[in-house]
Structure formats: structure tokens, C-alpha cells
Amino acid sequence: MTIQFEAPLMADATAISTLAETTFTKTFAHLYPPEDLQSFLATWMPPAKVAAQIESPDWTFRIARGGDGSLLGYIKLGPVEFDLPDSEPDPADATELHQLYVAPAAQGSGVAASLIGWALDHAREQGNRRIYLSVYIDNLRAQRFYARYGFYEVGKNPFEVGSTIDDDRIWRCDL
View 1 (cartoon, rainbow, N blue to C red):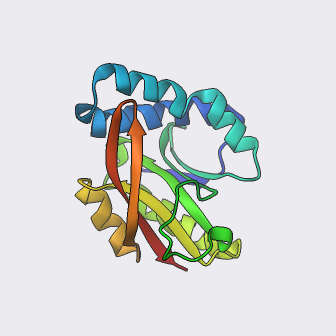
View 2 (view 1 turned 90 degrees about the horizontal axis):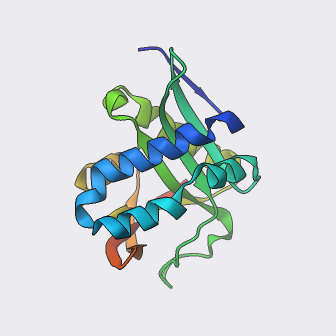
View 3 (view 1 turned 120 degrees about the vertical axis):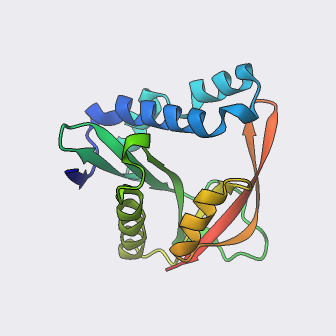
């Protein structure tokens, strides 16, 4: 499989939005009433929001593109948006890994490993000392993946999907 890693173009906003929605739904739809899921998805990652983030200096994306031009995965870094536990340092020199999604056909191909490696290197280059993320408490596959790269749990993050409040956990990696 030929894979190219690059910054996204504005024209990639719809593909990123679609991959986010498809992957989130495949993984988590069973947790939510359909109306809560649809309401969440409508505001979470619509193409216009993705396009605005691609243009913004506050957000950084890296995408993986197949040899046919298809989007195989992406990672998104940005400001720390959840409330950190009081025991955590000031997030001024930290970033948040907001999303890492890989298309089902590309899972196991090394796309996720390449994207997380890039994100850790990029965060260091930007002067960040820590990178945070939020992961669903029962998403053990993701937790094992992040632990391999030095992430560890430091707190809780209630994640709202409509009327459902998920028990997400905040994980941190020291850079």
C-alpha cells in the first residue's frame, strides 16, 4: 500500500469530516440514542468547521493519503480544551491531540503509528512539553496504543454526546 503523509488542503475538509463521522459512528454509535448521536455529529466535525480549523494557525492536521488519493487517516492537534486536574501543570506549554482516526481499510497498515510519531515530533518542535488527549474509558485498544507511545492517565474528562455523558479519561505524554 502506497501512503503519503502531508498537510491537508482545503479541498480535504469534506473527506476529513466524513472519515471522522464514519469512524466515530462505527466505534461508538451503540453507546448513544440515535437522536443524540445525530445531533452530536451535526455540530462536531462538519466540513465547514474542519475547513476553518485547517486555515487556523491554532490547529494542525496531518493526513495519510493512499496511492489513489483517498484519505486513509488523519491526526489533529490544537489547544487544550478540556479542564485539566488541579494536579496538572499549566497547559501553556502543552497541546491536545484532539483526533486520530484511521479508515478501517488502513487499520494495521502503520498509518496510526506514523501519524502519532509525527504528532509527537511536531509538538516537540513547537516547544510543547506535554501532549494531552481524551480517550473513552472502555476503548482499551486505543489506550494500549497510546500507552506504547508514553501516554498515561492523569484524570477524568466528561464527554457529552447529547444527553449521554461518557466517562473519558485524560492521558498525558511528557515530551
